[in-house]
Length: 117
Figure: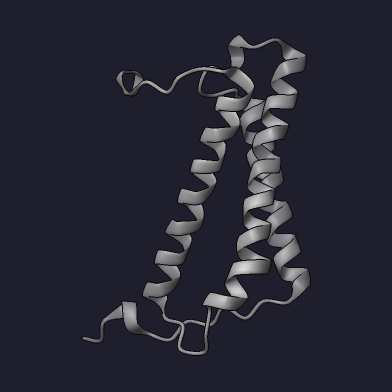
């Protein structure tokens, strides 16, 4: 059986496809956080909930834009595989998580404590 991680994987996207991808994910993040209010967002004032959720969506949009328009053309080559794509996705998700951490630190001025997890 052939290793699925070394199979060729096409990641050719037009600018329009990249913009749609970025907008859909960013709007989804904003709407999910604003509508379901996880992670203690329900404890904030209603007007503050909107702007905090919007901030998470904007952070996601910013990070995805950096990866899709600046880094991806430098990293993704013709011999792109499914395994490399998985690692690339994990790097993007981790970077968004780190950026969101700094966003939360800047707006809430709270120290991250592992005992809550």
